Amino acid sequence: MPKLCDGFCALYLYGMSTAPLAERLRPTSLDTYIGQRHLVGESGVIRRAIEAGVLPSIIFWGPPGVGKTTLANIIANQLKRPFYALSAINSGVKDVREVIDKAKSQSFFGTNQPVLFIDEIHRFSKAQQDSLLGAVEKGTVTLIGATTENPSFEVISALLSRCQVYILESLGKDDLVQLLHDALERDELLKQKRVVIEEYEALLRLSGGDARKLLNVFELVINAIGGDPVIITNDDVLKHVQQNMARYDKTGEQHYDIISAFIKSIRGSDPNAGVYWLARMLAGGEDPLFIARRLLILASEDVGNANPNALLLANNCFQAVHTIGMPEARIILAQTVTYLASSPKSNASYMAINEAMALVADTGDLPVPLHLRNAPTKLMKEIGYGRDYDYSHSHAGNFGQQEYLPGSLENHKLYEPGNSARENELRAYLRKCWGDKYNY
Image (cartoon, rainbow, N blue to C red):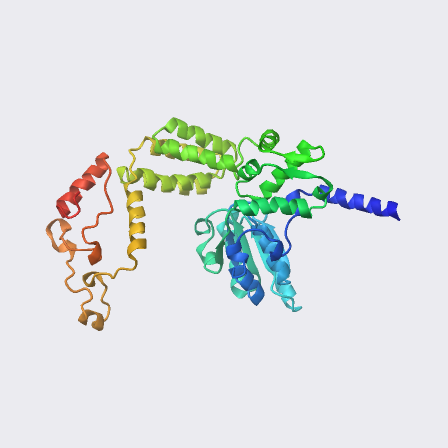
């Protein structure tokens, strides 16, 4: 019997060893789930939904490795619902319809409403997303979609309006450290070793807040160091991991470093560096739409009214990249990068909205002046709504001076044009209109 048990245990451990540490430690309940306390804590909306047994369709939005897939599994398990999982990378309309047909057939046997989990739902085309609408609206399935991209851009509005969007955050230091300790205490393979973590910084930095990446790096380092005990230091982690890291990890630390260098090069008017970092991202497999979206933001944030055409070109770039795809999209991206980098720069609009948001936070909901209010009813007109409003087009030059800010903010200037040729024209026009009011 001891030999049989030993053999069985060896087979059991061998089977576990074929799965990565992150998979072996995947939580199966909210009690073992780490992070996202705003969703799964005592008063978290997901925990309350599970306890109430009422679950809406959901879009989980967050970076890789924060527990989107795991949380979807836990929800289905705890609600005892059938669970279907599809990946948008290799699934199509046919796969979606097959799952919906299965869900419909199950409903005849009184089973709970199935959960359909779609990973990377942002990769579904409009037609594929449209195929979900009827089943979600009728309650045939409860949809849980996971995306690393802003669902406002990547999920069709009709589907988005039928789902609750919950944001999952990168794991913090305490969560990541707890994850490492849990691995040493719970994993059957790691319990066979003596592991001493003397320094955590390198492990945490390389993880980028990604639980899956942290555990994969942790396992790699333990196996590479060997010995008894296994003593882990920052130097050991960097030495062993750097030998195994890809030259461009589009979900890791280098991703953020390179996109940072890319944006700063364009902001700094260096088209050569901009195109170089663009090539680095494309060669590493970065999503061209991610790059195009960042260029669209930059066109407004860093070029702005110094060259208003920049925003038009960046928007056309985004649409063209979406339509054409790689490899030809590289040409459109390169044109936009070089144009933005070669354009005069201004962050005046960016600074204006930041100051305005801070002002709103400080002053609260100030009342709209009566003369600016809409007056669709007789009563509103009688109490003064819209009275004394001066229609700008009634004046020469289509401008007449009146106050547009709340009374307590009168004469408060938020927008200061930059010193580009185009913005100097805007400043001259504003000075002509307002005189000394805003001191342009």
